[in-house]
Length: 297
Ligand SMILES: O=C(O)CCC(=O)C(=O)O
Ligand SMILES: [Fe+2]
Image (cartoon, rainbow, N blue to C red):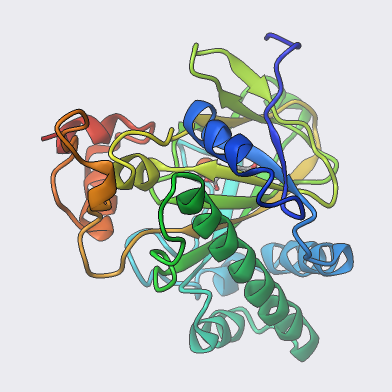
């Protein structure tokens, strides 16, 4: 692994100065850390505590967390990913959806309060970053305001026997962008740079990690990079992360803004909805961005 490389950092308190760096990071890496995002450190820590205890619930209760859209609910450890399980909450901007998620898991009033506060805070940050990415390309930043978001709370049961194996295999995220509150102590996340080298993403407590997904590539007509990443077991410790996905338009197709299509940049992808694309990925099991080739014009 090339130790001289590391992913870029974007300071959210330093705009407009950081637009150029944001655009370059999104095109070259599809991944960056953000600092000064305004989510209180205490809220991030409190949320981690809550999700750890929700993931410690008996499996019978976790199974109440059923799918709302394909694959959005509880994932039990499986033969493919035996070290991994996850809880999910589709449409975290909806207080009804947050309420249902908390009820499914018998969350206490104080746990509910934390999940609600965190969902609201992280939703604001993801909309802000989504808007800034568009603005960094000279576009209006309000295109993603109504797009649904999903939480996924990931737990990796790393053991001495699993050191060296994969917690989650190489994949891209299917949506537009992801904010990850990674584990503040246990590393293991690796992103692939454009030359195919893996770059370790070491924990940086208090910061958030942003990944661009397949919808960013489609929406930007190929300009933004969907980043391949995986989680490796590096040490025998439980790892917990909270991913928030900004998916894509709910019903309309994921068409690029007209400014990004011209005779020098002909349209690269067909017109389809995010949900159609998500189903295509699930049915083909093409998880690392390869499904994009199936929807090329
Ligand atoms: O746990 C992590 O750090 C990464 C999780 C991830 O890539 C995902 O949920 O899509
Ligand atoms: Fe991911």
